[in-house]
Amino acid sequence: MKKLEQIYEGKAKKVYRTDDPALYLVEYKDDATAFDGQKKGTIVGKGAINNRMTNLLMVLLEQKGVPTHFVEERSDRETVVRKVDIIPLEVIVRNVSAGHFAQRYGVEEGIAFDEPTVEFSYKNDALGDPLLNAMHARALKLATGEEIDEIIRRALQVNGILQEFFLTVGIRLVDFKLEFGRADDGTILLADEISPDTCRLWDMETGEKLDKDRFRRDLGHVEEAYQEVMRRLATSKD
Ligand code: TMP
Ligand code: ASP
Image (cartoon, rainbow, N blue to C red; front, top):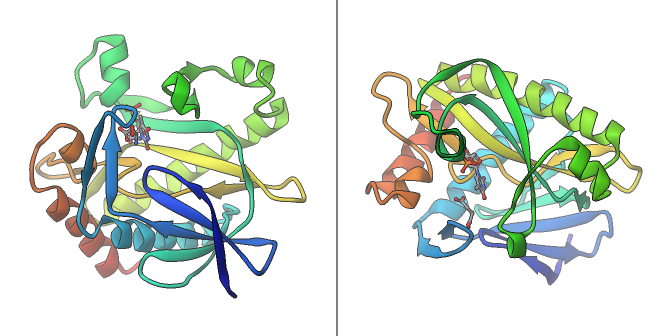
């Protein structure tokens, strides 16, 4: 498989066409941004960690019955994925209050919910990714009602699998963001990444943040936190 021209550059990844029209190649960068790109920086080694971690989790999810876009890891920063049309929804699952949830509703961080919540943002940088509900998503024709039902069901399934997995490595899965895509046959596949950029991961014992909040909030030891998550996942027996 040949890597052809770049077709998209996001804040953390680039996407390339390949000589197989059904496949794309994703390349992970060390670039980090926060607050709609207002804060910019580099997290050394992040691209390789996010690539490896995403793939490890995508394989686990596939094994447990979640259809994903993952095909194969091609190098430490590159992965072959199935070509999908990304549905422009950021699908956020939360188990514990944190981040924008805590801010928006004026509650402290760290309150465990009785059951997980799912929310959507409209993936649109120019608008600052505004929060929207399922009916808004349908009104904007971002997805059909059936697709939204499937996305919510899949997001909760992913949450159950990941929560259980992270527990085995001493990590509390606080919240995370998923993106889904439509394959050519209309199937909904889990796409994008699952990494410390897109999850809040707290050490179960100490509560220490092992995710991108260390960068967002200038907490220091950013690289070490990413490495620590990767170290735990790599040694897990799952
Ligand atoms: P939030 O509390 O800022 O809404 O974030 C919820 C989760 O989604 C958190 O784990 C970080 C992740 N996230 C992204 O992956 N991309 C984003 O642009 C934002 C705002 C959050
Ligand atoms: N990646 C997003 C941005 O640039 C936000 C975030 O992860 O906090 O702005």
